[in-house]
Length: 122
Image (cartoon, rainbow, N blue to C red; front, side, top):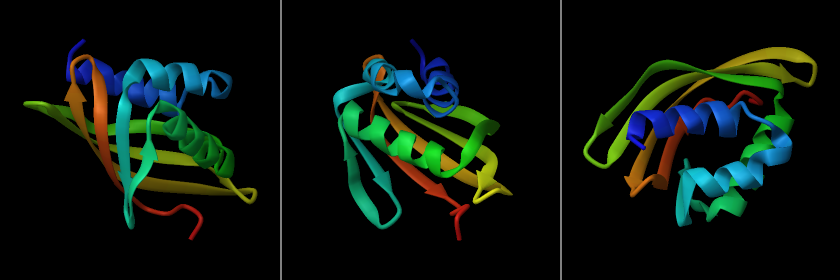
């Protein structure tokens, strides 16, 4: 699977997919030794289970969340980058926020992730 297709699965299946299947989906998209980096929290997620838990927590914090691709994905070597827009409800109020993803591909899965995003709860 190429990096572009893998990123579309990342956004469509993990960030927009069925919450009840997050653990299963994460296990097919990231490596067993996956590491996810969020601002001020390097190495926050380690492995597919922790990634699924973080995605679930974020999606439950922003009700009815939807993530849309704005630019990309742009593959380069073993990296793929993209810009996205998220929207949903926080404490009953509509929110829109933006972010950038950079992921490193290893084989047919992502092995590492860096994100820069606005905080929709601030």
